[in-house]
Image: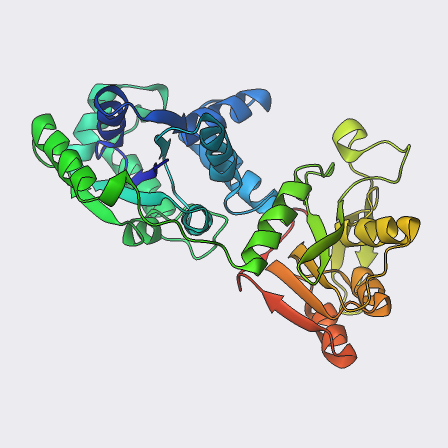
Length: 347
């Protein structure tokens, strides 16, 4: 199975490439735009470009930078045939898909004025804009250091091949054929994930069960490369969940005068995993804990007292400095898969 990710500028011809791969090469098709359209409609928002960007950034921030394409990849994997995922716009998405193997990234670009004229002819609901707005929208999405947010420029730099579509449709089709012909056996060599990548992927799968949309976090605790327990963010047993009745917010006044807002309805993923171990008599001494981001102070204390020796977090938590220092003093190794910082909304 070969997965081709499509990235590129607006109006460059991504849709033309997709149509050709679908009709002439029998690729299955999975669309980020369609995924976002369904989510925008579910939230009762207007289906325009600003809504798509807002919802995409929100999903990435509350799940993971690669959440949308990971969902589409799972659909493609179940199908088991060559597939296209259109369109990839965040670096975290590219990084995640590369780990899964059998993935190549194709970028499509063209002259800005040519692209603008193309979208005017296309005439979709999100394309009724003037040239200055077109340029401004693109600039906003083109370069952002946050892996949760759209960064077309960085994605295009990561592409395995870039097609310049300033000519005819026939020329573009020929370039696609040339690109496919250069792939050996229609797929690159499979890359086997490291143990940390393997367990972190399982951690993200566990997080799909989480019930608080401010941070659907997951946790997996292992020892000797064997899973001991798992946990995800959720309310205590028999109590209502955030997804059912909304958040239960409390404000915290800090020594420096700042105020932060926290949802206190749920139990953290790390705490739930430790509770599962306690209920089932599973010892965690010497284990490794995998989690979505730096554990909070309370979770850090529990982790230390359980005898866990190593913590692997996918991303840094914006308020995780105290936990990092506690782990350092207690001799608990803390490693990050990514060095980027994730922040909650309304923190």
